[in-house]
Length: 393
Image (tube, rainbow, N blue to C red; front, side, top):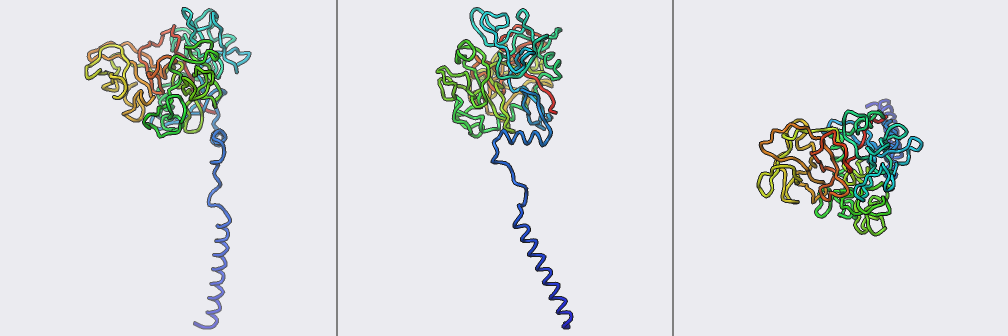
């Protein structure tokens, strides 16, 4: 190689080395990706996600992540059971006192629900359906009938719709995966893997005992508390704290850190789905086929009665009402099914889904609990409310 070529090669090599050093310095002084935000509180993370995707929900609603299995996109769901409020103050649900025409009560028992079919009580005119922590759950109304005073109509008049079964299952299958929802039976010591022995998927206010100071009686549905009071109203020692006497956890947390109240327990919820009686699941008690209306487990391990199939028809099947794990039952806090079992049944009466359980159904209650006996026009039920859904904006 000539002297001239050596000089040119040396110059070229020095330029390559200089450029390499500059690039190395640049990548050492800049992060490989923008900093994440795990140090922010969960509430702020949810706000960031919602804003970044330009999805917002009306007041009193929470954003529910969609689920491809159920073909649901993100939607907004009432955070609380439906309540009735005066249009003059939509932030405060109505809590009728004892003896009031709008108070759900019978023979001296105070149910803590709003009696929508009481004289002058229909939630129309100067009143409106809302989702607020205050107020008694709106009850004593059908899912659907020929009037405008039913759950579907109350949702529709506000531009919403009654929750469907696929939407309910989207929520239930979401919360079952979250360790924060798996706790001791008294709602304390949460944060365990789903299905951990001796832990339950929090199943809400269901034992028929509660703080008299919260809703006026010791055996009734409850108003909600702050999100940091998940066992609010369920104790009987005045503490309102999880691990207090008789405490039960009423809140469930979703994968996006949103919190929903009373999906399990407190009051049933009308769901926009129905099944013919002849298509309902069959069950067996200690191996013998059952006949008639009965409470059953989803799988063996709780009470002796267990469903032997998942029903027939387009509205039923395993994923229409059961948790993802086939061995979970009421001992895991997921609830039970009330259904008609009859091997040769030919009755084609349609029965509407109600889900979640109530304040007095014990381990029948749960996020997957389902009751298949009411017809859509059933009016005078003291413990069935509803939730509405709307698309996010």
